[in-house]
Length: 498
Image (cartoon, rainbow, N blue to C red; front, side, top):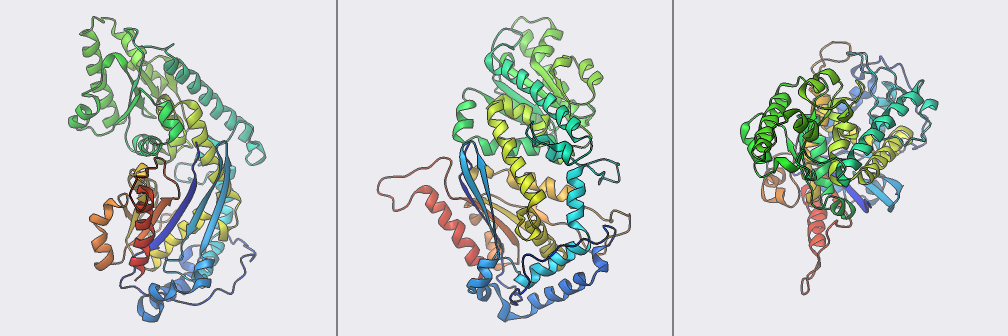
């Protein structure tokens, strides 16, 4: 499953904004010494320096982005890349943030800020299983979900070998179940193959898996693997959502996946009972009277509440667990996402997905801060929101396959950063997080881009791919469909800069 060459371009609209043009003179090999993690960002001089720098960006017209983008040296210095290998060949991610309202000096102030508050040590603590979730006294280990079986996690975290063993035990159990369903060994109660999958969950149980599902639908290998199958998501307790989701499905060929850690989530369990009623009525019309057998054949679960799931009628062998160190919004790589996605696309396709996620994990954990794409993106978000005072961020994927990216990131980012107090319980003296919204390009250009161009400054992340999943080239057309798309992708950031 080749990602192809990915190009990411992150640009703020700047029709009326300004920028501070001071060339960076700080070496990228600067030693990154960490201070005590207890230091608050507002207590260090770099915070005040960044506040002053932001005022300069707002007030000096000669530092407008239309001037700064003409500085070739500056633009060349504001690029980061990551190369990856997979079974389908090499791929590259390019982050071009030269149209952000930053200079080399701005970035150095940001790097110095996170140096003072101990970011590198906090990343190390995350990786090694320190209980950084102090509220619930838990580790945060979603990166363990995508580690290959042979990964030496025990060298990174005490007990890591055992944790990784548990992860792969669940993955192997899922793979066996998925194989039975996809091969026709596990069939519905009337003997028909199960080809329709309904994922019943809300929040991270829906947004992450639905995002990945849309991203894979046009992928060549995933498309072949999904032939003849349907994956749908049921989240809203509104009965209209149930009707839209299940109205055209055949109960005889439908498998419902209930996703609830505690098996008590109100919306999920009401939808699960509604699905159960729909399925039993539909099967009764086909002459099925054994309700227990019907539920055992047509329901599985992702939950840690095994007694509650079995009381619902689900076979213990068809219940797949996960751990308290998996936050809901980060759970797509656990059974929460991998089970329904594997039923639709196969375990092999989803193994490639997990390998790609692991590759980015390793980049995040090992790359120097000044070359670390996730860190750079995080710092730019802090700069735009905390210092520049921009409340919003537009997520603009120039790829229809990523149409659910904005909704997924809304949860991942806004649920994570929607905080009023610091970790010690004291009020935060500035607004936290960004309000994320977005649509695929070029659709958004005929919607809210007017406000971005002429109304107000909206930082924006443009995401595009150099090659299409579904290329089209028409005879007589001067450019391909994908080239037309990418022409807009490159033109819009420059237009916003001016």
